[in-house]
Structures are given as structure tokens and as C-alpha cells.
Length: 194
Image (cartoon, rainbow, N blue to C red; front, top):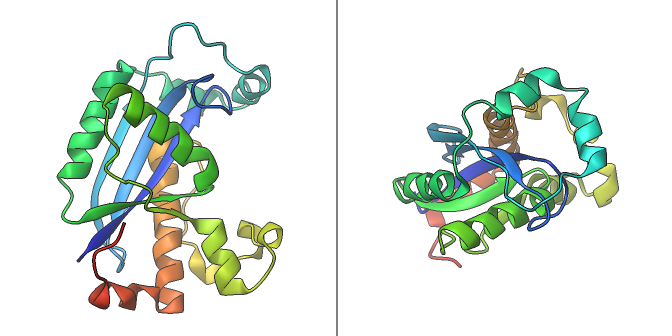
């Protein structure tokens, strides 16, 4: 196995890294054949001097259970991200970041890794699930949301807005897409990449 797919989900108090804080991060590492190799979860303290986004906080008021979950026992960001890097280093292959949408989650994770740990084990190995769906379904990007995806790609699982739950859910979705399209066969012949 040359690479492992780290489905990662974050919860935040706003849309912009460096202006808003990660509240929670969850990650689930899957092999291409959908074996769960490990999972990681942490709640983070908010960053001093940053102001939560009012629209985001209004949305959080509609999600009291998820809010309570992401605010339980928060850690300093340097500690949580240090643990995250150690966990990534312990995986059995090189990590590839998988997100939905990766355009939201990865910039936050990259900013936190750079700011608090000084390294990014993913490099720029990032897969966006919706972009992959666009290629498979041969449809425009905006027509490739979850409602347009085949039911067979989904395992029964609630979308809870708890970071680890959602990371596992989207990781299974990604692996099901790989299986449906023969993408998991690429593991056998994969060489070193960026």
C-alpha cells in the first residue's frame, strides 16, 4: 500500500482560516478497499483575538448537540495539531487528504499545521470528493452534489456535524466510489507521488 486516504472533517466558527477558528477536527484513515486503519479526533480551543462569524454562529444555534460535542474538553491548538501529526506519521502509508469539500477543510488544516506544528504531512496530496464525482458521473461540478450520486455509494450513516462521525461517513463514501469505478485497483501499481 503506497498511500492511505485520510478523510478529514472540521467544524469551525467561520469560513476563513486565520480569521476564524477550528472548533473540532476528525479524521478517519482508510485503505482503498475500505479498511479503517485508524481514527483521530480533537476539540480545539478558539484562537485569541479572532471573532466568530455571525452567520456561522447563527447556524450553530440550530445544532445544539453538535455544538456541545465540539466544545467538550477543548485542547490548545498546538497540542491537538501536534497529536494529529504524530497520528499521521504512524499510519501504514503516505497520507492523502480527502475532503468534502476539500476547498473548505484543507486550507484550515494546512493553516493550523503550518502555524502550530511547522509541517504538513499531506503536502498537497488532496482529493475533493465532489470533483471525483464530477469525473465519474461526467456531469458539471454543480450538478454533482450528494443528491445526484448513486445510492449505492452511500453506507447507512447519519450526518451529525460531529467531525469524526462525518469524516467516517465521507471516507466510506469515497471508498465506495473507488470500488464502483475500479479506482482501488490503482493501488497495486501506484508509484511515488507528490
